[in-house]
Image 1 (cartoon, rainbow, N blue to C red):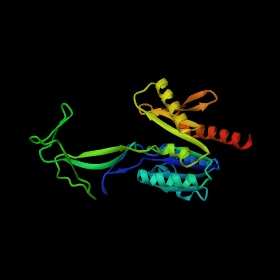
Image 2 (tube, rainbow, N blue to C red):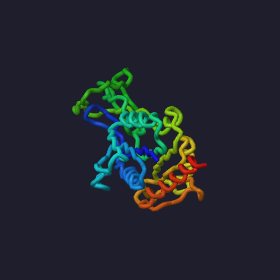
Image 3 (cartoon, helix red, strand yellow):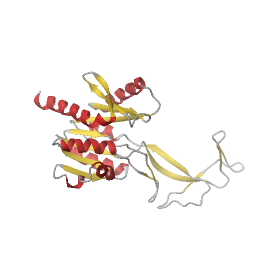
Image 4 (tube, one colour):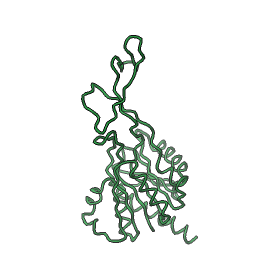
Length: 250
């Protein structure tokens, strides 16, 4: 199979030297990619964390023509790389494990003179009879002399939701879902709804609390299966190979 795998985290720039990101390292996607290559598949890995690949396999730079690693940094970088690869039309399976920004920076502001924020009740106050006002502070490097800054965030479009609806992808699709503070039943209910919404064939779901120990994979013949984290890459590839064989051989 020709596999396109995303891994790592995206940066949402605030200015040219600062940005918002998350804690995820890209290790899971790197592990899946290396396992897939070892099985003979052709792999394109889009990652912000190539160090995760070299930590798992110091010789990854010499894996040959079936292996391509492209590095990205920002949400826009990943969007562009994914769209170009998907629209090329030669991807049999897309495994989207990257932890993509949910929000993007849309402006930096400071309270204008006389404007105050009261955190006790979440209210703003202005000087005299003036309404409260924020002044824009966007710059190549936002100055650090303001007493406080306010960052406006807007929701980022879900990249995985572009894959079928906008990029006309018809191959196999794997989605990842991480939640916090849920029990297994709640997690799987949310995960399955999310899988169906995105038109994904398989879902990998876990919670932050259990992320290092286990994950759920499904839907398989027996529904969602709880797997030890160390078995995830092999079991995911097993499931994809079965689905691909059914598609290509009936």
